[in-house]
Image 1 (tube, rainbow, N blue to C red):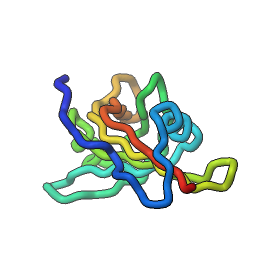
Image 2 (cartoon, rainbow, N blue to C red):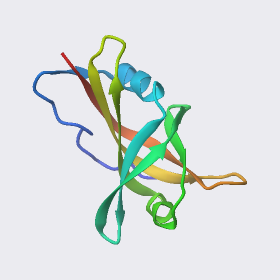
Image 3 (cartoon, rainbow, N blue to C red):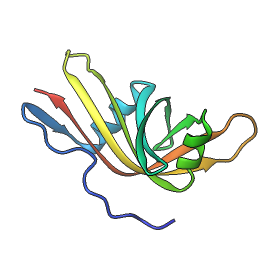
Length: 122
């Protein structure tokens, strides 16, 4: 797998504090719902996913054939957001290389995080 040169996953936001990598990973692990942006027939599609952070990557079941094709060694965007214990909104964006995960049963994909950035309200 070759490394793809990509910009930050999320630009700076006014009124927000940028999160470091550890804070981003912690927030990703604090929820199990996010959105993945894929390309289907050269058109952008946002797909809601239930996911888990496993060994530093994002893993999730793939339900549709379109999403299965779009996660076959392709670059995708991923986003999760929530509210931290202090009541501040946060958002983490990921640019990643998607790949299929081996194993019996349901189709699963993983995202190897190549760019990660996030912010929370101040």
